[in-house]
Length: 312
Image 1 (spheres, rainbow, N blue to C red):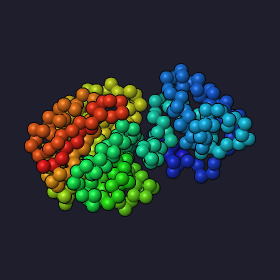
Image 2: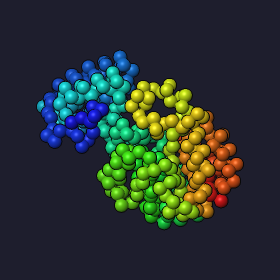
Image 3: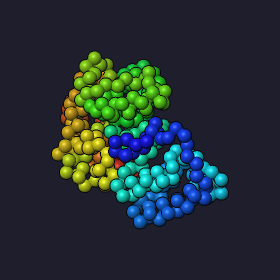
Image 4: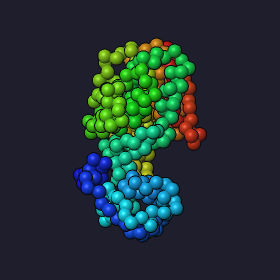
């Protein structure tokens, strides 16, 4: 039932469901709440775990109405559920890795420690790509690329919104591509997204000058900052997807320099970055000489998070 890291994923849950009384689960939940407070873990994560593994909805959890149910189906035993929760508390394993599921836009994505957990702010990349298509003369029957695809979230998001586009997703990690491909298949986009292993543009030589849009959430955290990240990230998420070199801009710098060879005229360049990098990224794009209409967009927290430009 567990992976080598001891984490459960959806396809590894027991085939025969376990049953527990509502009262037993309620008692366990109350103790888990106490432990969460003591460990400075948001109670919302406990609710999310029970939604995933016990099929309880938010209202039932808020009102605690499930307490009176004679039996509740669990995807694992109560003792195994407690073991998972203890791993969250003691080892700081992200709850998404414990259940093997991350919710992103309207998708339920499989995640493992081989891929970065997709963040809510990254969802805005899809909205920006769609807006670029609508406001500019980008051909909807087009080729779009997701570089550093990880779980496949961005590629799948592009395929879902740009319905006439063919999407190409690249990652240097084979383990990540296995997860991404499974997500695309599970969500019905297996025929719309093509996956390639390699570094950035390298597997896509055949698309030189033909790409209508490139979207990427590359590693952008300075190496010295990675070691200061919260333990959930530092200990469990892949550093390959986090570490952007000395100033955090190594990967973005490479994309700025290489994308013009692949983007068609008026093709979209769109990347995510961290707080404080907007000015440097905008300067890169403007001084490179192949881009026009460089724009910076903020996330929902008001942080300058995304850089967009068009190929001349």
